[in-house]
Image (cartoon, rainbow, N blue to C red; front, side, top):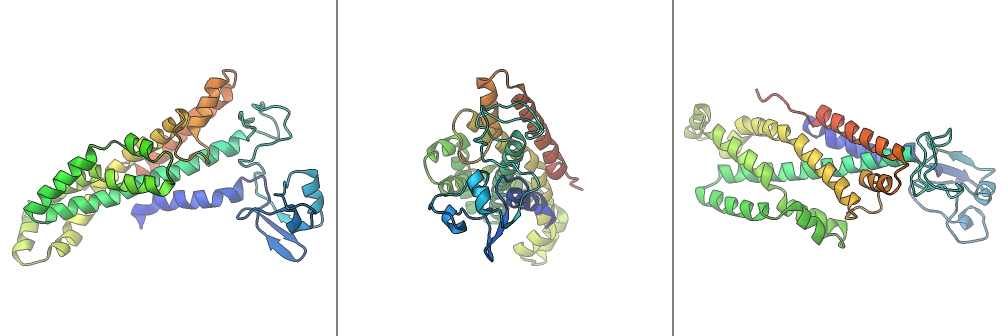
Length: 307
């Protein structure tokens, strides 16, 4: 379980984020009924209004509908929803918006935290998917026959020749599951190489050869002698993969190839800062975001001792 600690933390942070940063209420008790806007969109008619349109909880009419209701709000009452009452975007820092707003009228604090947490979750997920699949394949072909090893090496070289940017370009207009399928099929090669090399080095050790001569199965040898060293070798590469995936996602968003266009991104903020040279705050926030992600990557995915 300890090996999956970064993935568990990032997943938990992504799930709990709407409960901490949200302009809309988390839960509403209205007319003896509970409503949960954090999970579902509601109409004005659901709260006794006349129109069957989505309710704006910040509007005067929406607040009047809920004036006798009990509401539970997020600790930070700004989310990704733009503030349409602002006379202009790119507002300066104030008591209402600690770091101001971006060109879409969104609070920068909420936007940057959503962007970092979401892309950390995606980058960690991609890292662990490629690591688990690659390490499993690498160990399998090393413990199998020579013919299996040769075929595995040939398949690995074919998949290795397909760059990730090509996968992203192909799946740009496709549903997200297609991207993950092609990612899984092409991005396992790096960790397969590490796992195969480590496994062959361990198989050459006298104590493993002695276990083979005594008739122990390959699965038993894998579990007792190979699994932990391979995992530690793989762990030492996780930080590099994570930073690479995270940076790639922000770069693609900056160049307009965002594979998650409905979610915030540091690349989008950098693009806005370039379009508005006076918005120094956007660049400063983005720089701080990248530094924080680098620190988190070193703390949770940094090198481990192999001995």
